[in-house]
Image (cartoon, rainbow, N blue to C red):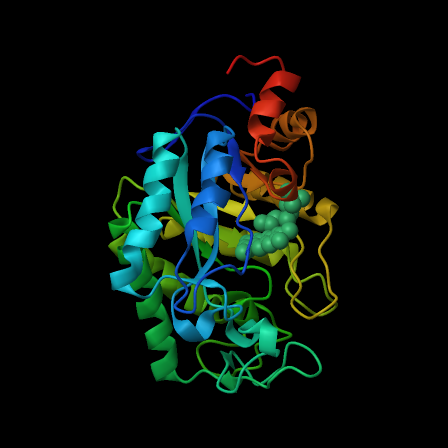
Length: 331
Ligand SMILES: Cc1cc2nc3c(=O)[nH]c(=O)nc-3n(C[C@H](O)[C@H](O)[C@H](O)COP(=O)(O)O)c2cc1C
């Protein structure tokens, strides 16, 4: 398999294996809607040859935004702003997805959390951040419903695929991690209970999201902290996601469950290998490369289906075409 082989995931065609990683840009308007800025930002990477563009973390409800300038998909009246980006990227030959998220206790980093933030348990992200409230049953129902509704809106905006964000210390990882989930109800304790909110949300999204369109989940390679989730546990969660209709696991980069913690590239690779060994039928995406040769080598050696590219694409919107020249592939 090479970097420039096309791919069909369910009914979604990609011209190559390069997907632009979701990367928060904090450039949205006060209602969480994209501006011309986003059209140029994502559109130029589609022009630059990516097989797929994955829009940055986009909150499913206002309280889940990572900052006051983060994207949000909860305003039906504003869907046209997303549709414009999707249409333009399609015209340039790229598939387009959106990463649906809720930041939980990491919401509103620009004010170090906000009164009223929520999480699995009242454990703050870092010193100086607000202490979140433990979500009650009604709030949890609202979260599941918001992910499903946002998927319906993503469909209306024309997205080809959606990704549920369960990494980077956001709400779902706050539930998955024994360091941040101290609950003793049905959402805390065993791994199955800690994964319950994520799995219920995936079920809700899958019901709204058409059969022919792919559903991705971004999972962390563990918490990168002593006493936290292990990579082996995340591989088990990946299997449960796949049973609920998830088509591809997007292995996350650094996944800080607390400020300062980090998961290394080696751990991400190990997660990919573990997925391949334990769930050989589940496709996955890996990232962390800077040039075409390294990308192709990683794709080959890891068995990944997609290669996600982040910072290299920020540095060079034409990264995909540059990789094609490097590998001697005709455009
Ligand atoms: C500025 C920036 C913003 C990011 N925002 C997100 C995000 O919104 N969602 C996410 O899952 N990952 C996010 N990431 C992580 C990237 O998607 C990617 O996994 C990471 O940068 C490693 O890949 P790279 O080495 O190709 O950059 C972000 C990374 C950067 C540099």
